[in-house]
Length: 508
Image (cartoon, rainbow, N blue to C red; front, side):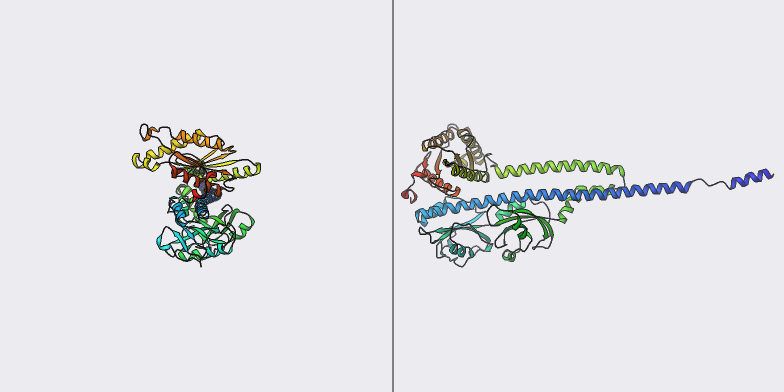
């Protein structure tokens, strides 16, 4: 009996099954797993944010470069109009002849609102808008600048409300000198700020993204997205940009915007040698939106460790895809900036750069250089009868033939519509230039099936040489344009040398 009681007592003192230690280990593993998931997610979010910040900085640099090139292209186009308009007026002294030249420019009014000729007394003597004629602008800043500043300087005035149209515009102008060097007035173009911001909007990359074109001398905006309130156009922008710009023509800085108080990382670049700077800004909110858009799906499955690794894989593929898309977009931006979308010929920007380099080399090496201005005869009739699609096919075919007709060292640019510029470095003699021009006309004049059996296209060409007819790109362009004007006036399929132009040619 005692043995049985002893056995029962020993049984009652045995330890209980190890349930609590197992629960503790389970909670420990679960807690560590949760901490690992939360820590890994936090690390991943932080890493993604830094990656997006680096990506945004790279995109901002590419964006500011694209905006700068677009701005230069527009201003160079407007400046070419002013050079041509001033050249005709100085050569002829005739307002009527200058107005005829302006009428034939057929400029885009969505970019250039109007072109003006202003007398030395500040009176508008030429303008498309009759209401503007005979008005005085003698009190305007741009007029006073040219009146008091000798030399051929381009003025890009602040945005002001037009007295006739009531629109907010800025003015691009150049001084006219009399033969004795005294002030003779100015030529001026009124430019619509939206012509710049339309392109800026096309590359907008965030809800709080900004792009601003600022004057470096007066610190006033010329164009901006989002567009400022009207009173802000005349308010100088106080920003660390000016100190940064004094140190380097391009770079970055961080500050709160003077327009809306939002803190942004800004990337800037001087616009060529113009008194302008292009600034693009991304806010911290833009970066957060980009990160959330990319990895927002991670948080609903943060408790499942296997999906965490899947998320990392998907993110890696997303990053690679984003890099490929960015590379493709960058290539597309470069293609858009450097080549004409319709013909594939070099764009105005690329052609202007090559022309400037060719003139520098020609001056340094004492060699020749020529510019041909080619215009298709009666091209409007093709669009009217065969349609614009056929007209586009004709422009592509004509461009291909022109490339076949010149040397690989020559450059052809579609300047606009059915007008082309041909740069001939080391151009040789006048006879050789005329032979090249006639070969171009012959190639172009061959039948083009798309516009009808046996139907042909003809062309007229004006030729100007460096340095005889012009020593700057603008002067050479104006001389070639004047020669083309005479060729068009005399008939179709003509070649005219700027060297053959005289006072009588310029006044008719």
